[in-house]
Amino acid sequence: MFPTTGQEAGTTRVTTPTDREIRIERVFDAPRDRVWRAYSDPTLLTQWWGRGNRVDIERFELKRGGHWRFVEHSLEGVDGFEGRFAEVVPQERITQTFEWDGMPGYPSFATATFEQLGPNQTKVVTTSRFYTTEMRDGMLGSGMEQGLNQSYAALDKLLTTLH
Image 1 (cartoon, rainbow, N blue to C red):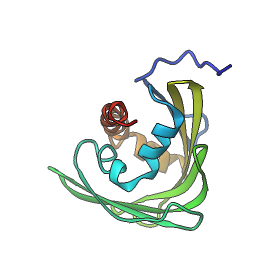
Image 2: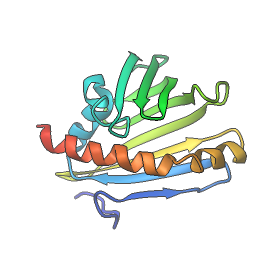
Image 3: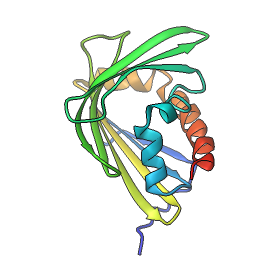
Image 4: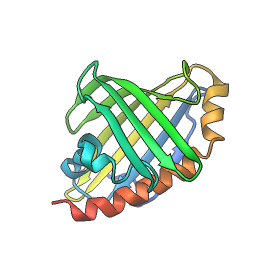
């Protein structure tokens, strides 16, 4: 028996459970192992992570203490993002820091969990914690939700091609 959420696949739910957190929930029409692969394989990550823009992965060490760095190339310019993995539990959880080059020294701390809802559905919940309410609100006001939806739409398409 699999849990249910009442959330439709393809719908992103963004909430602010505390004054320093953002919680993102998304249900994907794919089994957990496929969703995990899309999050953990650098070749697949480049196909969905950057809102449809070119993404160069300069580092991706998916292990505790491992460093990651992505560079997104868009019409607006080049943006770098990086962090360190604090915890990696295959097909269950990734905990990492997340820092944008445009605001160095102000990382957020994010945990993504992967929950199998049925044979072909997976719920991903990402909770990001910020040092201040202003940092959280700055992220919300940056267009994050629109960019996230663009990336998740690309992930939806990618998941249909994986077996």
